[in-house]
Image 1 (cartoon, rainbow, N blue to C red):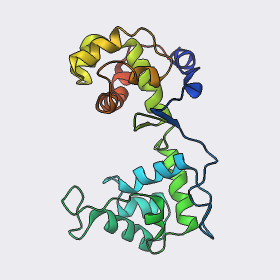
Image 2 (cartoon, one colour):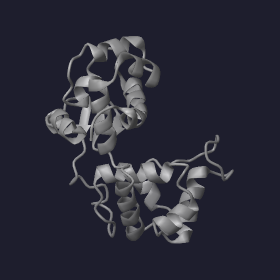
Image 3 (tube, rainbow, N blue to C red):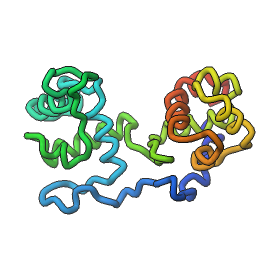
Image 4 (cartoon, helix red, strand yellow):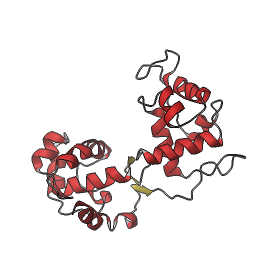
Length: 210
């Protein structure tokens, strides 16, 4: 049942693009000008960056689960953590793009391909970006369901939205895509991020039949 509802809601999502929205195009290469590098589409590239910049991505995970050369794994984590060797501190140095990642020793075409595969497996690859906020396929599904079926209390207390944004969303009727949500008054990037963050928790508890 939930899958049917989602299909109905998302039917128009892939055609709704405007100045505030960019749908990722799979054949737009990031590495098509670098000799010897694989062609990696922008969505996969975003997923790879989310993976290597996540503090939960440690050397062991990159070495064993992703199957990178341990030297590449160590250097990726060391680059991200900065000189103090810790995440979430003042000297963190997250990767800004794949060119910076490819400059790390032992990170070549094979490593990038493995990182891309893992990013897809972990649902880190964005499906759409609305007002600069990226949503993976699962985040997109959960957020669309939530804005259509959540109560005022859930959007207010659970998602932590400004009451004016809650009112605008609730009064906006049914939504076929997130572009329509982003166009509502008081719903900007911060509100979209809050909706995305709360959507998985809401979807897990929502009384919607599978």
